[in-house]
Length: 160
Image (cartoon, rainbow, N blue to C red; front, side, top):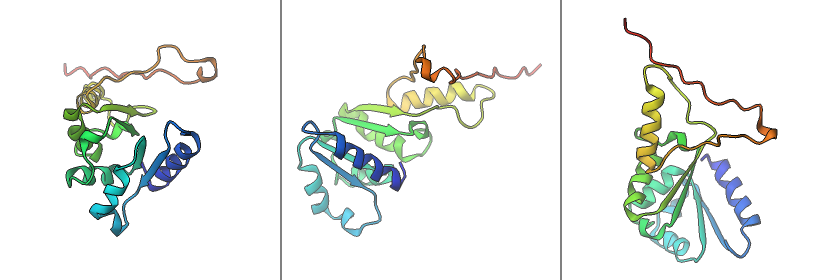
């Protein structure tokens, strides 16, 4: 998520988390103290913690050992359609999967970029592989969402 989205999600969780989620911390990068070991110790020692952050910050903290994968029980990836190629989400998921963290990817649509020559299926398979799950969408939309259309898959062009 962007820096503004981190602030927005942090505020929402603080306002609606209640007793179930008493500690919400947003990490955005750009702060020198963020990369000091004491800062991460003070963040991760809290119980029922929700850590909201920019994907690159979370990746660096995990790779540097400042945030331990074994301490994460669930990770939610907003705009999960980016979890392909060398994106930081891909690296974060690869670090968390062996620790058996639950990974939840959210996106309005994984359909972006080229849809030709099997690209859509390859993208879906890569997302599923990288996040260790499957792409799911509701088969029936509620009446207030009836204007949303199911994706149209373009078949590969005939080479003949």
